[in-house]
Length: 150
Image 1 (cartoon, rainbow, N blue to C red):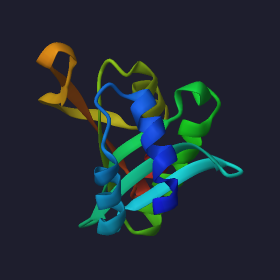
Image 2: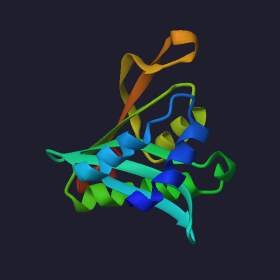
Image 3: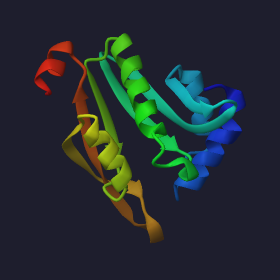
Image 4: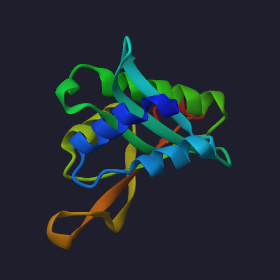
């Protein structure tokens, strides 16, 4: 992801979420040196992912696919790419938060071996000023866990 990708990224974010990140948040992620990636079909951005890496841990901050491109494999491809980035950078574990109401995302993460390890109460903004909990998921990235599936 580069600054030139931000109009497309912000457009996808706004189309996908009722409470989207601002362009400034994405710019901050780029400046901070997070692993910011786009999934593109030629020059057309179809989705993006942002990964923070520190202290042998990876945190998937955002993974989003253009709504019109759902169920075409972009999410799985991008998640696998970001898992590879985390492994190359010696992360031992990856964490993420997801809305329980985002069933497609929950299925994606669970199909890649993530397991729920906790709940963050009232983590996400919701309609009419409410709040929605977040499920916290984790996946071991240590090579010995690959053989055992843990």
